[in-house]
Length: 407
Ligand SMILES: Cc1cc2nc3c(=O)[nH]c(=O)nc-3n(C[C@H](O)[C@H](O)[C@H](O)COP(=O)(O)OP(=O)(O)OC[C@H]3O[C@@H](n4cnc5c(N)ncnc54)[C@H](O)[C@@H]3O)c2cc1C
Ligand SMILES: O=C1O[C@H]([C@@H](O)CO)C(O)=C1O
Image 1: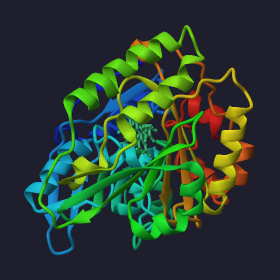
Image 2: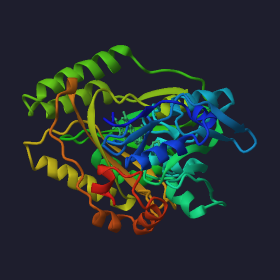
Image 3: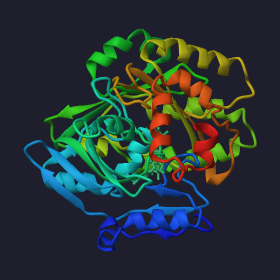
């Protein structure tokens, strides 16, 4: 938490009652030469939301109007998706897609471009149809495809760099159930059958178990079937969480154990076909277990086979590396959001994890992308930077992370 920061936990409506609201904070920060960051659920596995200036935290915000005709809902920026899921459920609605966890906020998920999987679906920011943004000048700008369209595009994946998102309007869908089907395969087979899997399921992803050929295929599509569960506390938690954490902790002293953990746990927990039916948001969210480092890379979908076989060869070629399972492979449809990893191309996401059993540090590298790299990866990056500089010439919303990595 910032040393000099003011940790403001008032929901926006309190600030709305104070003349100027968040605008006063910007003014105060300006007078004290401080910068301002907004934190959502604090779930980004990086320093992107950190600051030594003022930190604004909006929470427990009520939802605003639901448009049942258009199936749209306007929410305050700080609402957790876990709260929104329940609110929408009351209205017979649900978000089209969600990341692995819902303890994240409406403005946070468009801060970093949260995604799940589904080649017919984009990343979560593509579900946003409007938002309002308090910019450094103190002005509140309404943004949508029709109003301030260029800023709307940039603000749908804003990195916390454009201002304070005050509210977000999501396009949702009718609520329903999803059938989750999981079954074993091999890396070679799933890569050979990739097109077929992408046709078989609109929400297809798979988990590869490093140092093995083993893969767990997952389909999680809407269904009219009634709810049924396949979970078992013993296998999912006693073995799949607590025993795994203990064995990974042992492996921090004996790294050669990781290969065996990947093999044995695949056999124990992931080598049979399973089916279950649950509420959409419950199936899309999943158990992420204990503390971990994560890096999620997006590549052109056509490079999926090449990238994974290269990753496998690198691991097989270096017996000193013990890579934890799973490497999670997901797919998202192209979009027109300037800083989206799916900008104008269908993408494959490769999510690499390294658990930290009982908090014990694990060997982990940070991504080393610089502005130069990002200008190559994101054609619209210079335009985003120019827009950011125009809106916030004094860098009020910057922090060391954004300056090091982006600007
Ligand atoms: C267990 C776990 C599982 C995850 N699973 C997935 C997954 O499946 N897919 C995926 O893509 N990601 C996943 N993530 C990453 C997560 O979805 C993103 O990091 C997301 O941005 C976190 O949302 P948050 O509300 O916690 O935002 P924070 O981390 O608090 O902030 C994210 C960014 O948004 C900015 N911000 C937040 N609120 C505002 C606001 N009101 N105005 C302006 N800027 C704001 C912050 O300054 C920061 O730059 C996971 C993370 C964890 C910890
Ligand atoms: O950051 C992330 O964390 C989860 C998962 O790796 C947690 O175990 C996920 O899918 C992300 O993109």
